[in-house]
Length: 381
Image 1 (cartoon, rainbow, N blue to C red):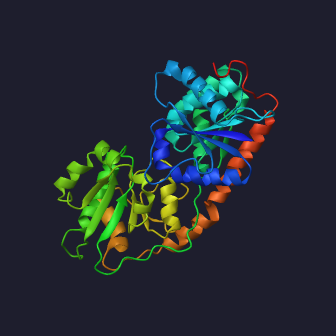
Image 2: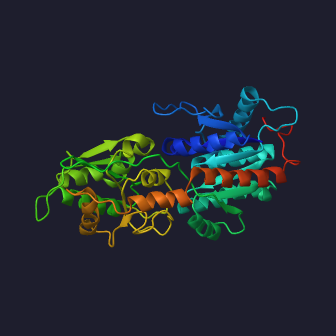
């Protein structure tokens, strides 16, 4: 079986680890993975294509150029990884990141193969409906399947796209052999603020709670550094707030923070202020490493289990955040949920389970249309 993995640039920046784990698992099962990479992509921390065949593609262009770009990508695949006599150019195209969905739909239509869309947040619903409509209009409505990155995504997506085939394949990670050691007494504490910036007031409340820990008062002040993503900081005006709270010397803005996983996992706490239902394997990795997670309650994330996988705040206020963060980042740090969070990940969110679920989707839909799928005489035109 030949599968084209088509991530957009944003997804590739954030979830390279997920793609790498998935491709390794699929390769072990005999799947030939063709990994499309946006032209100009580079990464200092991690290469792509170690367990797959990397093929460059143009990820930008006006909507009417999608057919042209699809044709170029198909020809590139035929040149770089020509199929055997009994093989198709690819059996399925699996799109990660919404910006890749329109091109993936065009590829599926042109080749008559199966379209797989990876859905990782509820807000993708409208584009999901349009993308499925593109396939349906070509007579291929039964050749599209949606993979939900969390069980709790299935119903929200089904409400937006009734009749769509939606299959859960929850994202997973590996369990490291050991967990992070607790911070030493007197050591500067570090916290990672992980957010998109779409809910600015929630981010501001969490940051103000972190700032409260550094103030001298009834409790000992915490020597603290806070790391935040550059896009998030720009989107919600975090730097301006840091100056107002006299936290600008304690705030470090990092470009593409989510892709710098090794750095993030060395911090003392992961702070999740938003409630957008957005899936991130970085959260699972933190739990697997025994890194304390403090979060706003998010019913869209099955990994947020109060008093089991993380500490949660009762209200989205600075005082509530400070109260939840002080036991984790204070002079005598406690992480009562670190062990149970790691156990929860081991029982519910292993990468091997995700690979198995994705493989079942491939086998079910890929084989169902094996006789009908093919490049066709005009596929690369």
